[in-house]
Amino acid sequence: MDCSSTIVVKGREIGPGKPIFLTAEIGCSHEGNFDQAMKLLKGAKDGGCDGADLFIASGYDFYHATTGFQDLDNREEWIKLSFSPDQWRALFDYADEIGLILYVTPLDFPSIELARKLKSPMVNINSDDANNPLHLERVATLGVPVTMHDINITLAEIESAVHVLRKNGCKDIIILHSTQESGEEATLYSTANLRVMDTYRAAFSGLGVQIGCVEHTTSDFLIYAVAAREPVLISKHLLDQHNDAVADNVISVDIKSLAQMVRKVRYVEASLGKGVNCLVADQQGNIDVGSAGRRKVLVAAKDLSKGHVIKSGDIIAKRPGHKGGLHPSMVYKLHGARVSNDIPKDQVVDLNMFADYQATDYKFPNLEVYRSSGHQKGA
Image 1 (spheres, helix red, strand yellow):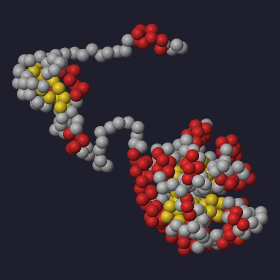
Image 2 (cartoon, helix red, strand yellow; image 1 turned 180 degrees about the vertical axis):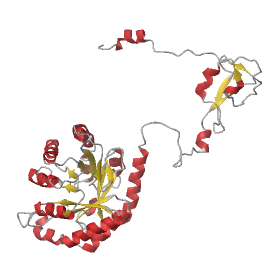
Image 3 (cartoon, one colour; image 1 turned 30 degrees about the horizontal axis):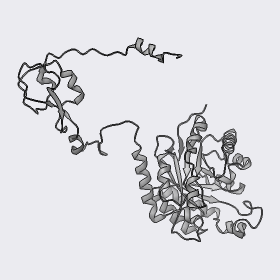
Image 4 (cartoon, helix red, strand yellow; image 1 turned 60 degrees about the vertical axis):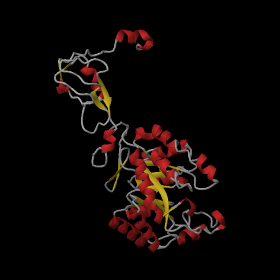
């Protein structure tokens, strides 16, 4: 079984226990404007994203007919959204210059080959092609990590896609659960189905497959629920400014709002913690005096004379605890001990104030009682 725990893209590790890889899905919101594409890359970097994803399509290889959605000539529309190979190279060079990981979503065979020439360090598979073995086979030959969307794709189709990719040499796979792009608000939430990421983990983590999410809804808060599900990658559409004429306008975050969104995602990520309770400390490891003061320590419940043998009620726990002292659980160790010198009421006590401690038996579990209670092996 291949249980590799991380995927590495240009030195950036992606996987459980690593910071969420945040992708600005620019798609084609640049509207074919090269300068706008450059601006969006800069906005993604300045906003705190790790990477950016742009679509590539050749038009005539993407559509077999001139009309498709919205009675547009979709071949011509995609030609308008295209860049020349030199422009693509300039975009990749610029991303490298500013420290942003740029990768592409190729939507047809010529675009896959262009991704190969551009040395895209990772490629995304659009939902349309998650059930297209011909596309999957070709993408696998690129020899780079692959992310894959799942809009309207069944679990069986996802399983088949993973099989095709692995069979053709692609081992670094991130399945991106995609929330819906359109519909009534209530429908968007009721179909978000974030728990399917858990299903994917159960089904595919043994193969080293990672799980992420594309947050496609119009919501301004669902991405934070996504972050709490601990995906390895989150992708969110990005545009310059909201405009109904721009593709994916309603499901996108604009450049101005991106940094705040990223910061909140990082806060959610940090708030999940490590799964163990601990003293609350700041980033430098310092415990706040107020927090420490709320803890209790052991003190004398009354004036205790030299030679007095401690019994229940002689020692109690009180605040504040920021000046040192014994943890309340130590009280039983003091029972039966002898006071070495007079201790006034409310004096914080320590072990040096007592002598003749009584031995405390270690309480091993009574295994015979345990076994007779019906919990023995095979019961």
